[in-house]
Length: 231
Image 1: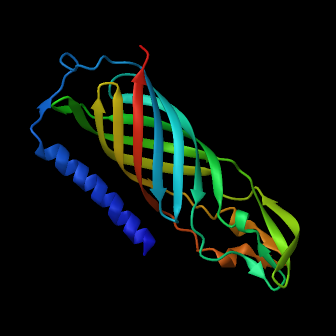
Image 2 (image 1 turned 30 degrees about the vertical axis):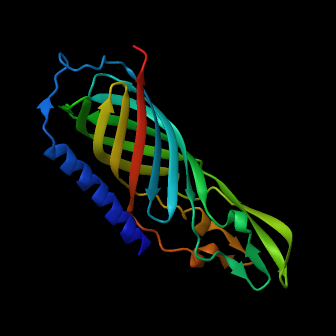
Image 3 (image 1 turned 180 degrees about the vertical axis):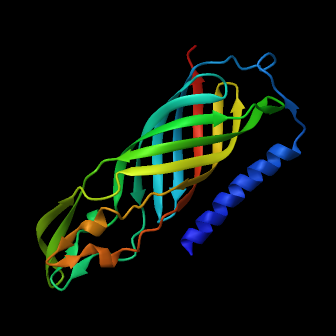
Protein backbone atom coordinates (compact mmCIF):
# COMPACT_ATOMS: atom_id res chain seq x y z
CA UNK A 1 0.00 0.00 0.00
CA UNK A 2 2.81 2.41 0.86
CA UNK A 3 4.59 1.61 -2.39
CA UNK A 4 1.42 2.33 -4.36
CA UNK A 5 0.97 5.65 -2.52
CA UNK A 6 4.56 6.67 -3.24
CA UNK A 7 4.15 5.80 -6.91
CA UNK A 8 0.94 7.87 -7.10
CA UNK A 9 2.65 10.86 -5.42
CA UNK A 10 5.56 10.62 -7.88
CA UNK A 11 3.25 10.53 -10.89
CA UNK A 12 1.14 13.42 -9.56
CA UNK A 13 4.28 15.53 -8.97
CA UNK A 14 5.48 15.08 -12.52
CA UNK A 15 1.99 15.59 -13.99
CA UNK A 16 1.32 18.79 -12.03
CA UNK A 17 4.70 20.23 -13.00
CA UNK A 18 4.06 19.42 -16.65
CA UNK A 19 0.59 21.02 -16.56
CA UNK A 20 1.96 24.20 -14.99
CA UNK A 21 4.74 24.42 -17.56
CA UNK A 22 2.29 23.84 -20.42
CA UNK A 23 -0.41 26.24 -19.26
CA UNK A 24 1.50 29.46 -18.56
CA UNK A 25 2.27 32.06 -21.25
CA UNK A 26 5.70 31.18 -22.53
CA UNK A 27 8.20 31.98 -25.21
CA UNK A 28 11.25 30.12 -26.35
CA UNK A 29 14.57 31.23 -24.89
CA UNK A 30 17.72 31.25 -26.99
CA UNK A 31 21.26 31.76 -25.70
CA UNK A 32 21.22 35.32 -27.06
CA UNK A 33 18.28 36.55 -24.97
CA UNK A 34 18.78 34.33 -21.91
CA UNK A 35 19.42 36.74 -18.99
CA UNK A 36 21.45 34.13 -17.14
CA UNK A 37 25.16 34.15 -17.95
CA UNK A 38 26.23 30.59 -18.71
CA UNK A 39 28.68 28.88 -16.33
CA UNK A 40 30.29 25.46 -16.50
CA UNK A 41 29.88 24.51 -12.83
CA UNK A 42 26.75 23.16 -11.14
CA UNK A 43 26.52 22.06 -7.52
CA UNK A 44 23.37 20.47 -6.17
CA UNK A 45 21.67 18.82 -3.21
CA UNK A 46 19.03 16.13 -3.76
CA UNK A 47 16.51 14.49 -1.47
CA UNK A 48 14.32 11.59 -2.53
CA UNK A 49 11.79 9.11 -1.23
CA UNK A 50 11.92 5.67 -2.79
CA UNK A 51 9.83 2.53 -2.51
CA UNK A 52 10.90 -0.04 0.08
CA UNK A 53 10.41 2.71 2.69
CA UNK A 54 13.74 4.45 2.18
CA UNK A 55 14.99 8.01 1.75
CA UNK A 56 18.03 9.29 -0.14
CA UNK A 57 20.27 12.34 0.44
CA UNK A 58 22.95 13.38 -2.03
CA UNK A 59 25.38 16.18 -2.87
CA UNK A 60 26.60 16.38 -6.46
CA UNK A 61 28.62 18.32 -9.00
CA UNK A 62 28.30 18.47 -12.80
CA UNK A 63 30.56 20.10 -15.32
CA UNK A 64 28.26 21.62 -17.95
CA UNK A 65 29.67 21.09 -21.42
CA UNK A 66 27.02 23.50 -22.67
CA UNK A 67 23.60 24.69 -21.50
CA UNK A 68 22.01 21.30 -22.09
CA UNK A 69 24.57 18.59 -21.25
CA UNK A 70 26.55 18.02 -18.08
CA UNK A 71 28.77 15.23 -16.78
CA UNK A 72 29.52 14.60 -13.14
CA UNK A 73 28.63 12.69 -10.04
CA UNK A 74 27.74 12.81 -6.41
CA UNK A 75 28.14 11.27 -2.98
CA UNK A 76 25.11 10.15 -1.07
CA UNK A 77 23.44 7.76 1.27
CA UNK A 78 20.15 5.94 1.40
CA UNK A 79 18.51 4.69 4.56
CA UNK A 80 15.48 2.54 5.32
CA UNK A 81 13.22 4.48 7.72
CA UNK A 82 10.65 1.78 8.55
CA UNK A 83 11.03 -1.91 9.32
CA UNK A 84 8.06 -4.21 9.74
CA UNK A 85 9.73 -6.77 11.98
CA UNK A 86 13.32 -8.00 11.89
CA UNK A 87 15.29 -11.26 12.18
CA UNK A 88 15.03 -13.06 15.52
CA UNK A 89 15.02 -16.50 17.03
CA UNK A 90 14.11 -18.16 20.35
CA UNK A 91 17.20 -16.83 22.13
CA UNK A 92 18.44 -14.00 19.92
CA UNK A 93 17.32 -11.04 17.82
CA UNK A 94 18.81 -8.42 15.55
CA UNK A 95 19.85 -5.26 17.36
CA UNK A 96 17.38 -2.43 16.74
CA UNK A 97 20.13 -0.11 15.50
CA UNK A 98 20.93 -2.70 12.80
CA UNK A 99 17.33 -3.44 11.82
CA UNK A 100 17.07 -0.80 9.07
CA UNK A 101 19.57 -1.20 6.21
CA UNK A 102 21.41 1.74 4.68
CA UNK A 103 24.47 2.35 2.53
CA UNK A 104 26.78 4.98 1.07
CA UNK A 105 27.28 5.36 -2.66
CA UNK A 106 29.13 7.15 -5.43
CA UNK A 107 26.81 8.17 -8.25
CA UNK A 108 28.07 8.91 -11.78
CA UNK A 109 25.59 10.59 -14.11
CA UNK A 110 24.91 12.62 -17.23
CA UNK A 111 22.57 15.60 -16.91
CA UNK A 112 20.45 16.25 -20.02
CA UNK A 113 18.25 19.35 -20.37
CA UNK A 114 15.95 20.57 -23.12
CA UNK A 115 16.06 24.18 -24.34
CA UNK A 116 13.98 26.27 -21.95
CA UNK A 117 10.86 28.34 -22.21
CA UNK A 118 10.40 31.42 -20.05
CA UNK A 119 7.61 32.72 -17.85
CA UNK A 120 8.41 36.07 -16.31
CA UNK A 121 11.91 35.63 -14.83
CA UNK A 122 11.92 31.83 -14.63
CA UNK A 123 13.10 29.36 -17.27
CA UNK A 124 11.29 26.03 -17.57
CA UNK A 125 12.29 22.83 -19.28
CA UNK A 126 12.49 19.06 -19.13
CA UNK A 127 15.44 17.08 -17.79
CA UNK A 128 16.71 13.52 -17.62
CA UNK A 129 19.60 12.11 -15.63
CA UNK A 130 20.73 8.53 -16.34
CA UNK A 131 23.19 7.26 -13.76
CA UNK A 132 24.91 4.34 -12.11
CA UNK A 133 25.38 4.13 -8.34
CA UNK A 134 28.39 2.30 -6.89
CA UNK A 135 27.55 1.20 -3.36
CA UNK A 136 29.98 0.27 -0.59
CA UNK A 137 30.22 -3.53 -1.12
CA UNK A 138 29.99 -4.38 2.56
CA UNK A 139 27.58 -4.29 5.47
CA UNK A 140 27.61 -5.36 9.09
CA UNK A 141 24.96 -5.85 11.74
CA UNK A 142 24.82 -6.87 15.39
CA UNK A 143 22.81 -9.69 16.92
CA UNK A 144 22.06 -9.84 20.65
CA UNK A 145 21.53 -12.97 22.70
CA UNK A 146 18.28 -12.85 24.65
CA UNK A 147 17.76 -13.99 28.25
CA UNK A 148 14.07 -13.40 28.67
CA UNK A 149 13.73 -9.71 27.88
CA UNK A 150 17.37 -8.96 28.69
CA UNK A 151 19.79 -8.43 25.79
CA UNK A 152 23.43 -9.47 26.17
CA UNK A 153 26.48 -10.77 24.29
CA UNK A 154 26.34 -8.78 21.07
CA UNK A 155 27.68 -10.62 18.01
CA UNK A 156 28.84 -8.92 14.82
CA UNK A 157 27.82 -10.33 11.43
CA UNK A 158 29.14 -9.01 8.12
CA UNK A 159 29.01 -9.75 4.41
CA UNK A 160 30.23 -8.36 1.10
CA UNK A 161 27.72 -10.36 -0.93
CA UNK A 162 25.01 -8.08 -2.25
CA UNK A 163 24.10 -5.47 -4.83
CA UNK A 164 26.99 -3.05 -5.36
CA UNK A 165 25.91 -1.56 -8.72
CA UNK A 166 22.57 0.23 -9.16
CA UNK A 167 21.24 1.67 -12.43
CA UNK A 168 18.97 4.71 -12.10
CA UNK A 169 17.08 7.20 -14.27
CA UNK A 170 15.62 10.48 -13.03
CA UNK A 171 13.23 12.42 -15.24
CA UNK A 172 11.22 15.55 -14.58
CA UNK A 173 10.90 19.31 -14.81
CA UNK A 174 13.57 21.94 -14.18
CA UNK A 175 13.01 25.60 -13.43
CA UNK A 176 15.85 28.11 -13.15
CA UNK A 177 15.84 31.53 -11.48
CA UNK A 178 19.14 33.07 -12.57
CA UNK A 179 21.91 30.88 -11.12
CA UNK A 180 19.48 28.95 -8.88
CA UNK A 181 17.79 25.84 -10.24
CA UNK A 182 15.17 23.41 -9.00
CA UNK A 183 14.51 19.96 -10.45
CA UNK A 184 11.58 17.75 -9.46
CA UNK A 185 10.29 14.50 -10.82
CA UNK A 186 10.28 10.74 -10.88
CA UNK A 187 13.12 8.27 -10.28
CA UNK A 188 13.33 4.69 -11.46
CA UNK A 189 16.06 2.20 -10.45
CA UNK A 190 16.84 -1.40 -9.59
CA UNK A 191 17.88 -0.56 -6.01
CA UNK A 192 17.33 -3.47 -3.61
CA UNK A 193 17.87 -2.27 -0.04
CA UNK A 194 17.77 -5.78 1.44
CA UNK A 195 20.30 -7.42 -0.90
CA UNK A 196 23.07 -7.65 1.70
CA UNK A 197 20.81 -8.55 4.61
CA UNK A 198 19.42 -11.56 2.77
CA UNK A 199 22.92 -13.08 2.73
CA UNK A 200 23.29 -12.98 6.52
CA UNK A 201 22.42 -15.80 8.92
CA UNK A 202 22.73 -16.60 12.62
CA UNK A 203 22.51 -19.93 14.44
CA UNK A 204 21.59 -21.59 11.16
CA UNK A 205 18.69 -19.18 10.52
CA UNK A 206 18.88 -17.27 7.23
CA UNK A 207 17.80 -13.63 7.30
CA UNK A 208 16.28 -14.12 3.85
CA UNK A 209 13.02 -15.38 5.35
CA UNK A 210 12.46 -12.10 7.20
CA UNK A 211 12.70 -9.77 4.20
CA UNK A 212 10.56 -9.39 1.06
CA UNK A 213 11.62 -11.03 -2.19
CA UNK A 214 13.76 -8.87 -4.52
CA UNK A 215 11.78 -6.38 -6.60
CA UNK A 216 13.41 -5.58 -9.97
CA UNK A 217 12.05 -2.01 -10.01
CA UNK A 218 12.23 0.70 -7.36
CA UNK A 219 10.17 3.90 -7.79
CA UNK A 220 10.56 7.28 -6.18
CA UNK A 221 10.11 11.04 -6.19
CA UNK A 222 13.05 13.45 -6.00
CA UNK A 223 13.66 17.16 -5.46
CA UNK A 224 16.96 18.86 -6.33
CA UNK A 225 18.19 22.35 -5.46
CA UNK A 226 21.08 23.46 -7.69
CA UNK A 227 23.40 26.44 -8.01
CA UNK A 228 25.42 27.44 -11.08
CA UNK A 229 28.70 29.16 -10.24
CA UNK A 230 32.12 30.16 -11.54
CA UNK A 231 32.88 30.78 -15.21
